[in-house]
Image 1 (tube, one colour):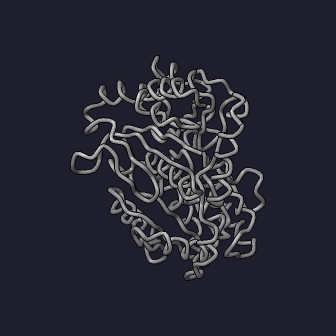
Image 2 (cartoon, rainbow, N blue to C red):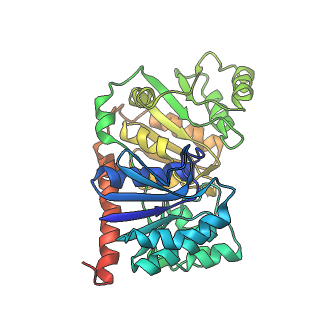
Image 3 (cartoon, one colour):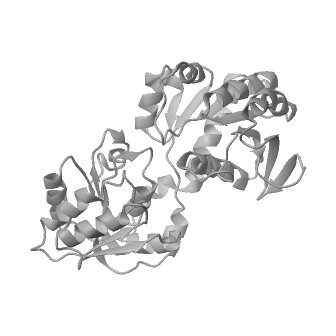
Length: 353
């Protein structure tokens, strides 16, 4: 299947959650042997209009992100010329959706939009116009799906597809040192690590240790808070770790705590659950993390430091595991299959198969 992906900005331009998600989808389908083309602004040196990387053809529709108008004007025609079976665009900026939709119309191909929403979903005229164009809108969670429907999208075309994990890789990494509680996220203003530290401080009389994975502008403040709470001898701030190191840490941990205030999809929580951790999520209106633990027998949803403390205590009664087969459904192959099923269903609806 020939798939045309449209995104002026990619992970090669800027490392954001939205761009990483889009690149993941591109990589998933390229790894399955499909003919994948990415239409973007040029990020490579020289005058070449296209480059090949890892089995993916990148088309430099315009030169530099500042040439956005040129990009939007040219996209419909360059996309249509490749005669794609499906056109799949990133949702931001909204004008990109309208341009990609026109290209899909010229190519007579189904049109899919990837709406990640890590910065929220804007409530403006252009966003509402964009929600009415796709044949299918894919979001990472029900939270983002709800936001998109609130902006005018037909609920029947919105589908939540989670970020994938590499389950075989998890199985291959040996468990690390045993620790009771682990937290992993960039330590910025949205990390809300203080909720976990305050909850742990209430358990001073118990035997526990905790690991904080991640770095960021608020790390020093959180380290000071741990000292003020007199738990700094039990909380290890280990900074950024590689994926293998994080997996080993999760497989050695008993509880993974998710307290961040904003989260389109909690990929590290998902990895930790697959590594056998008990999941404890502090509910926030702008976080989808609670969706992963709702109905899960080894998951807790809390709304306060007191409930968080109680959940950590209750989690101690559950057995330690270092792998959870139930989360194999989130493996890369399974998620790739979900995208391909959607593409085929849309083509079937148009009588193309």
